[in-house]
Length: 102
Image (cartoon, rainbow, N blue to C red; front, side, top):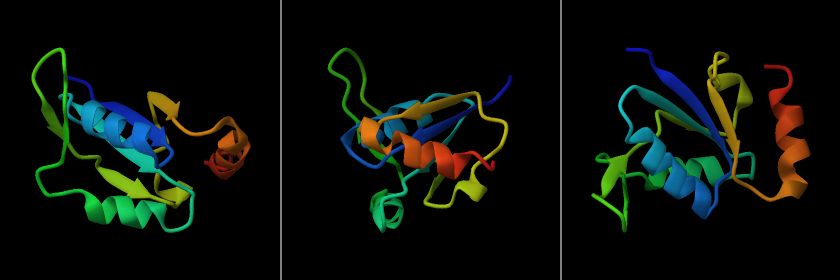
Protein backbone atom coordinates (compact mmCIF):
# COMPACT_ATOMS: atom_id res chain seq x y z
CA UNK A 1 0.00 0.00 0.00
CA UNK A 2 1.35 3.44 -0.87
CA UNK A 3 2.08 6.11 1.69
CA UNK A 4 0.52 9.56 1.42
CA UNK A 5 2.83 12.42 2.36
CA UNK A 6 1.09 15.53 3.65
CA UNK A 7 2.53 18.91 4.62
CA UNK A 8 0.50 21.07 6.99
CA UNK A 9 1.59 24.71 7.12
CA UNK A 10 0.74 26.81 10.17
CA UNK A 11 0.63 26.41 13.91
CA UNK A 12 -2.81 27.41 15.14
CA UNK A 13 -5.97 25.55 16.09
CA UNK A 14 -6.60 24.22 12.58
CA UNK A 15 -3.14 22.66 12.48
CA UNK A 16 -3.70 21.02 15.87
CA UNK A 17 -6.86 19.33 14.59
CA UNK A 18 -5.50 18.51 11.12
CA UNK A 19 -2.23 17.09 12.41
CA UNK A 20 -4.10 14.77 14.76
CA UNK A 21 -6.81 13.71 12.32
CA UNK A 22 -4.69 13.31 9.17
CA UNK A 23 -1.85 11.49 10.92
CA UNK A 24 -4.34 9.02 12.41
CA UNK A 25 -5.01 7.69 8.91
CA UNK A 26 -3.13 4.52 7.93
CA UNK A 27 -0.09 4.95 5.67
CA UNK A 28 -0.02 8.71 6.04
CA UNK A 29 3.17 10.64 6.74
CA UNK A 30 2.44 14.11 8.16
CA UNK A 31 4.87 17.00 8.47
CA UNK A 32 3.95 20.28 10.14
CA UNK A 33 5.82 23.45 9.14
CA UNK A 34 5.44 26.49 11.38
CA UNK A 35 7.57 29.52 10.58
CA UNK A 36 6.36 31.62 13.51
CA UNK A 37 9.35 31.93 15.88
CA UNK A 38 9.27 29.27 18.59
CA UNK A 39 5.93 27.79 17.47
CA UNK A 40 7.29 24.53 16.03
CA UNK A 41 9.27 23.79 19.17
CA UNK A 42 6.27 24.50 21.41
CA UNK A 43 4.01 22.28 19.33
CA UNK A 44 6.60 19.49 19.11
CA UNK A 45 7.10 19.53 22.89
CA UNK A 46 3.36 19.58 23.63
CA UNK A 47 2.50 16.41 21.69
CA UNK A 48 2.17 13.45 24.07
CA UNK A 49 3.67 10.07 23.13
CA UNK A 50 0.26 8.62 22.27
CA UNK A 51 -0.52 11.57 19.99
CA UNK A 52 -3.16 14.25 20.10
CA UNK A 53 -6.77 13.23 20.58
CA UNK A 54 -9.12 14.43 17.86
CA UNK A 55 -12.68 14.46 19.15
CA UNK A 56 -15.08 13.44 16.42
CA UNK A 57 -18.74 14.33 17.02
CA UNK A 58 -19.76 12.10 14.10
CA UNK A 59 -17.83 8.98 15.04
CA UNK A 60 -15.02 7.60 17.11
CA UNK A 61 -12.30 9.83 18.50
CA UNK A 62 -8.84 9.25 17.04
CA UNK A 63 -5.28 9.85 18.15
CA UNK A 64 -2.64 11.05 15.75
CA UNK A 65 0.90 12.34 15.87
CA UNK A 66 2.73 14.09 13.04
CA UNK A 67 5.98 12.46 12.00
CA UNK A 68 7.80 15.79 12.04
CA UNK A 69 7.11 19.28 13.40
CA UNK A 70 9.67 21.78 12.16
CA UNK A 71 10.47 25.37 11.34
CA UNK A 72 13.07 24.31 8.77
CA UNK A 73 11.72 23.91 5.21
CA UNK A 74 14.80 21.91 4.20
CA UNK A 75 13.67 19.07 6.52
CA UNK A 76 10.40 18.57 4.64
CA UNK A 77 10.09 15.56 2.30
CA UNK A 78 10.30 16.60 -1.37
CA UNK A 79 7.78 14.13 -2.76
CA UNK A 80 4.61 15.43 -1.10
CA UNK A 81 1.14 14.39 -2.18
CA UNK A 82 -0.71 17.25 -0.51
CA UNK A 83 0.12 20.66 0.97
CA UNK A 84 -2.42 22.44 3.19
CA UNK A 85 -2.09 26.07 4.26
CA UNK A 86 -4.12 26.47 7.45
CA UNK A 87 -3.02 29.98 8.30
CA UNK A 88 -3.95 33.60 7.57
CA UNK A 89 -3.68 34.64 3.93
CA UNK A 90 -1.20 37.43 4.70
CA UNK A 91 1.36 34.74 5.65
CA UNK A 92 0.99 32.65 2.48
CA UNK A 93 3.73 34.54 0.64
CA UNK A 94 6.19 33.96 3.49
CA UNK A 95 5.53 30.20 3.40
CA UNK A 96 5.69 30.01 -0.40
CA UNK A 97 9.03 31.83 -0.45
CA UNK A 98 10.40 29.56 2.29
CA UNK A 99 9.28 26.43 0.40
CA UNK A 100 10.31 27.54 -3.10
CA UNK A 101 13.93 26.31 -2.97
CA UNK A 102 12.73 22.85 -1.98
